[in-house]
Amino acid sequence: MLPELVTAIPGPRSLELAERLRAHESRNVTYVSPHFPIFWQEAASANVWDVDGNRFLDLTSGFGVASLGYTPAAVVEGAREQLGRLYHAMGDVHPTAEKVELCAKLSALTFESWGVGPGKAILTNSGSEAVEAALKTAWLATHRRGVLAFEGGYHGLGYGALTVTGRKLFRDPFAAQLADFASFLPFPDVQQTAHRTAFSRSAEALLAPGDIGAILVEPVQGRGGEIVPPEWLLPELRVLADRFGVILIFDEIYTGFHRTGPRFGCERSRAWPDLICLGKALTSGFPLAACVGRSELMDQAWPESTGEALHTSTFLGNPLGCRMALESLALLEGDSWEERVLALGMHLADGLRNLRGGCLGAARGIGLMQGIEVINGKGTPDAGRAGALVEAMLARGILLLGGGTEQNILSFTPPFVIKPSELDFALGQLRDLAG
Ligand SMILES: Cc1ncc(COP(=O)(O)O)c(C=O)c1O
Image (tube, rainbow, N blue to C red):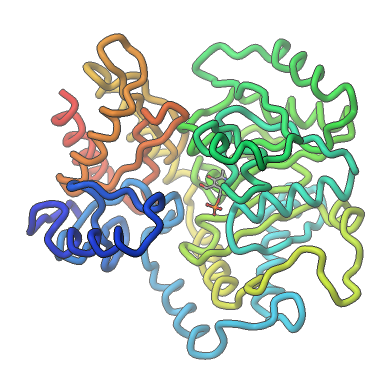
């Protein structure tokens, strides 16, 4: 449904909550301005209602989580049934059938479906922790401390994940406490002619000394600004990983579960990792993520538990989260999402390309992971204008996020259930504001 606004934005109740929040939440967490944020009350499909009764159209999927739209009936019903019965167990001691089902499902959807063999999972409470579980696995398997990662890459903000996140903004304030095991290569961008041979030479120079045990990459950089690499990138990394005996980790926390079209971003170029990190849309909204690896590798890396797990947490394999994941995965398997996402993505990409002009620059992306640059008169990134556009779109009832290493990309990652007419409405509003 299109937006329906009944108050000024933010409305009085949102403004009041923002004031209270400022008093009691660490001030770095939630950005508060006279125009931002709105406080959510409920959500369905691609719509969010705020506490003032305004209806918004969401082009963010709440950070790429609500791919199926908000509150899909099967997930809600499954969660209700689970909630009334059991919503906490002892994840690494006395677990639940839901955890068994989910681990088996994750194996079936990843390594088994690629014909690689069975997979084994470590469930976690956030994407950041899933990446850290992957880093630990690679270390245990290789005993080589280095990790090759990419500039602009985003893998989460826990100290381990931050160490391999290629964004100064997040790293610099903590640089003195970050370990030095990551090396970063520029992320090849399909829009700028990226040369495979030159890329391989740089990667080889880093891998040849033998200190690097893992390569970590997003199949499409999400928070880095919807940057699509050339199709050769993942196959080339596979070749390099095999040649240098390195563990290849795909961080599909954003790209997973059809965000780019196929079930996983890596399926576009048919290159398979040794470890894959999953999160976000996995549960449709419960904080649960996973690191899944080839069984052989997982068993080589991790010793059998004799009573004390080396990597676990209180809420590991939470039954409500597992149940929500199982319900979400059943929905994600039960429809032709790939065609739908690619068709909607094409529609969105065409619309964004047509907006070019004034402060709107090049559009980029794949599937329902699209972005458009905001630039100033000199053609350079304009983060201030991008932020102003996000606020102005909010005032028109459209939820958008800014992104990119220069903070000047408007990101479009809507739920897969959004209608072309709703996308057109949002693009029309952007044209209006940017013109
Ligand atoms: C590719 C990628 N990896 C990891 C993360 C971190 O996940 P979380 O925020 O759940 O810790 C994100 C979050 O945006 C992400 O996009």
